[in-house]
Image (cartoon, rainbow, N blue to C red):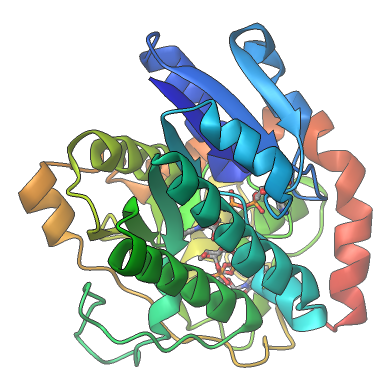
Length: 331
Ligand code: NAD
Ligand code: TDX
């Protein structure tokens, strides 16, 4: 099988490519990545001989058409992915997430290829903290931010291309990922690298917002399960029953790092900050037999802290600039 992985030099895409090469010797991987600030080609240096890497834009129709034509399956991870950045400058979100997905869809349609589109639980908006409900595939779309609205729009484009043109596509909406190679602008790696830099962790607002954490390897195993066993035109929700509020996550990081429990700051809240996400992944579990392997978030976080401690050269060059941007916003 020849697989085109868009966004393969970012956090989840890197983990997907490394794991695919390790566990599926019969798969040929081509990565298409624009190497924005969030992408890093060095992530893939250990498998450079085993993959084809193309630096390019998913909104560039010519490049996309050629690469889609040369592959059997497209796994579309490429996106602008950070809510805080989307609040400062939404333009690249519209271009990459909407025009990029449109460009992929047109190429997939022309060449009759299979697409798996990677999306997020944020398309459903948020839940109240005391609401026992979780998102299902029938929850109405209700995105809050420029990021999540462009991801919602990209999902709707995929659905329309399936219905109108018979494109062979599946969609997955996953909850918050953590693990190695995540950009340090994101919550968990920001706090881990803060602690490693002697900076106090920064919690937006009261820290009561809830995210449903899943280890990136569990997400990527689910993606392979859908590629291999998923029914065409279906949407699958991916989640590992990992609901925790941000305060709890910071508490665990402090404890695992041997710091006092109150060694953190409350900072300016995010505009329009979604309260709670929670995924009901029973469709994926019951229909396709997927199960998460990382069910102990404490152990998963300990392993992630070790990775950032052991790979300081990977994140250190970006740290001062990331913190300076947050400081400007009072965060
Ligand atoms: P990331 O920001 O770490 O990586 C994105 C990658 O896409 C980078 O390598 C970047 O260079 C590349 N890219 C950006 N614009 C591009 C363009 N125009 N053309 C080609 N490449 C481009 O993001 P991530 O956290 O790995 O997320 C990957 C996907 O998973 C996204 O679609 C995101 O919406 C989705 N997702 C993420 C999470 C999460 O918790 N991180 C959860 C659910 C879904
Ligand atoms: O310094 C921080 N302090 C803080 O309290 C940062 C960076 C974040 N937060 C809060 C905001 C959220 O409640 O932590 C939570 C997680 O924040 P992010 O890591 O920015 O993730 P989120 O906004 O939930 O979105 C993530 O999950 C869904 C990914 O970035 C998206 O790509 C994915 O779709």
